[in-house]
Length: 179
Image 1 (cartoon, rainbow, N blue to C red):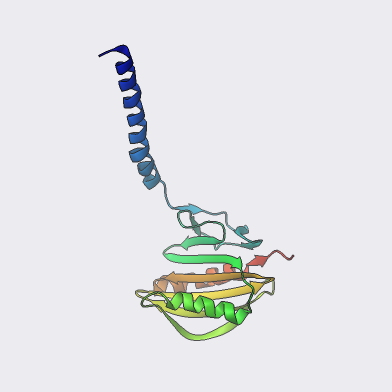
Image 2 (cartoon, rainbow, N blue to C red):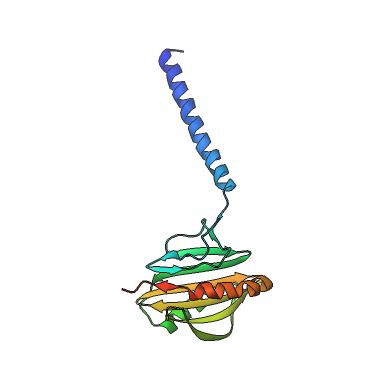
């Protein structure tokens, strides 16, 4: 075996070791990092499109599913999902779209009447409840200046009920940047 073959074998082995480290090392590091990260209490969190919310005390941000325009907070076992996007229609249409999105999931049903609500800023919204296999849920939708916000809460009945006051305060803290 000549010098060139030995050198090529060395480089090939080195490249193979780097690929192996990337293929097995990065997933191991990723699995070791927690998906939920704490967020500062009492401070507005940017959701996208100029919308912010003050997360409830003790909430954690799920970094594996959150991205601009879609934010998932966890409060214990309760999922608090906020989706922000441009929306051109009226509030009733935005609420119907969210109800359809909920009921498109197998076993999910909207329950009870839908009622009007508003943020501390005075932005009007609609809210209601739903059930899913093993969990209860609440939903809300808000619309201001062409920006829609869809919110779903889901958790075991007792845990959702005990966290509902803090979650309701957080939802009311939604703030829309005025154009």
